[in-house]
Length: 210
Picture 1: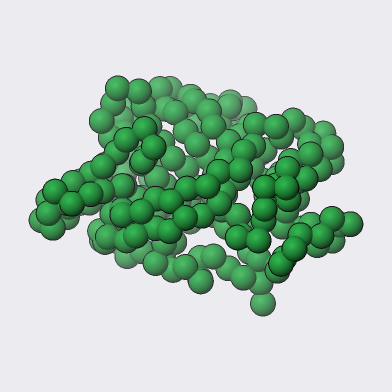
Picture 2: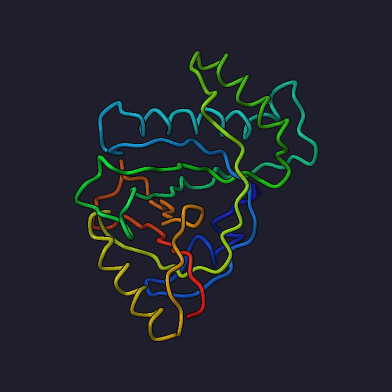
């Protein structure tokens, strides 16, 4: 049976619909950075997602190619994730999506080394006839965070964030957003197939003790 991050690391991908505190360990990702409205048809965000999946699937299916990754085992494609911020804005202003900065990521299995990633970028660019050079190999250790499962449309996330903030206040923690520690979303639903009221999104914020 293929390894499934969502099942093996439930505490990070399947939290309850109420706030909880977790310590998130170091992990490697395929990442593409950009700015602008994620809903813009054919815009930078949608192009970035195409690059991410092109590289991700090249790695996932590498065992069917001549290129062999040391320690490889079959795995289920991890969910799409995103880090979001706006210049000079505390938190997130959902009303002005044009000012978003973002880093879109897909988690990598630990056996994927930098050289394997570079092979995948080059191979995906050739096979898909698209420039995948915007993809980068990103290592992150999020550390102490508060998170919860948000059910509903992205524009309704402030209600869940308010619950998280209240939970922090009750438990002697505060948000610790910096230029390195960002608002994080993990998309557990295929928004093409699920109605917005039922979308599942993990919302995660970096925190510190008060």
